[in-house]
Image (cartoon, rainbow, N blue to C red; front, side, top):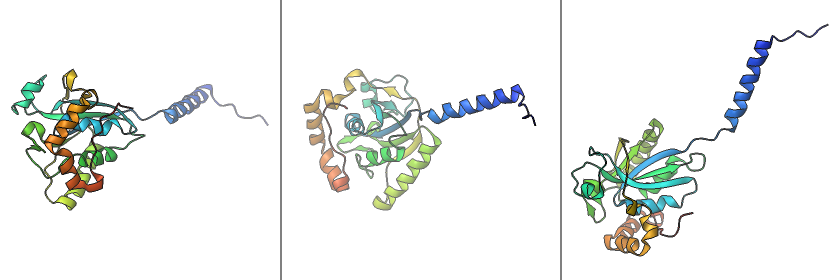
Length: 210
């Protein structure tokens, strides 16, 4: 008895489907972007630099209306922008939920109108989500913080255009380590973080990046 022949068109289709499955199985998740505002962006860059799965960190400005803002413009508090940190990460190595924990442990969740010794809308704490999944995760994490602290000052808003800060702000904590540590100490950031979070408090990394 002869084996029925498979029409060449059907056979070709099966081959394409099989190859597509192989390619898809070998694909890696694309890097994603998270954006956080937590006061001085010098101090928000370092905590993320030392996380496995974080590919890059970029201090900058977002959340306002002024196009291509400068540091001096943002510092006036009149642009609507906040000093922020753009974090590019590999979701197969580090989850957004883990990045959120790092964020919380490096801010004062109950302080509105600034962070630590820095006051003004440009230093406000805020989470800018770039996907719907991030929004859901951010809101869930905020609810957990509310259980612990009561009123939480951090807003959760959709991400708008992000403007990288001037070059001299990039990697400030590693290129200007002494000044960075002096600023943190004078601002009382580490002292307050320790009072709020205890052993969970963020630390003042300032050595070379991985």
